[in-house]
Image 1: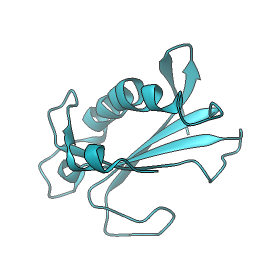
Image 2: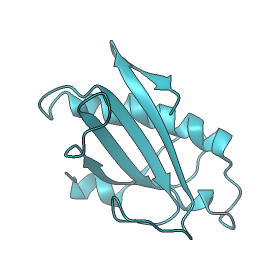
Image 3: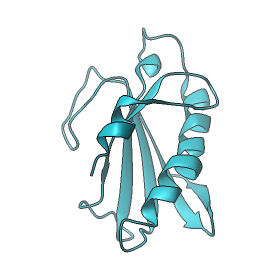
Length: 120
């Protein structure tokens, strides 16, 4: 599920890096049931892309879970058991391997109106 207006806009994140929404995937269940996977392109996480480290990107991913993903799941139907936020330095098709791409993933459970980090 994509929103063309959102896809074209860079999103504001705490680090200031440019992040672009790609899609949300909800048809690939996780071990605990329904999962909403929000996928973003974040070119600055590339090994040669500007030095955004995982620790910095993790703060951006948590921010996007709370400010971007949570407001959108209320209108998607059943509430997922988990939200996964993924960053890739380039647009990588869901489920495809891309050894040259830098990718970061974080998982969150929904607790009230907040995303709570869960270790993979």
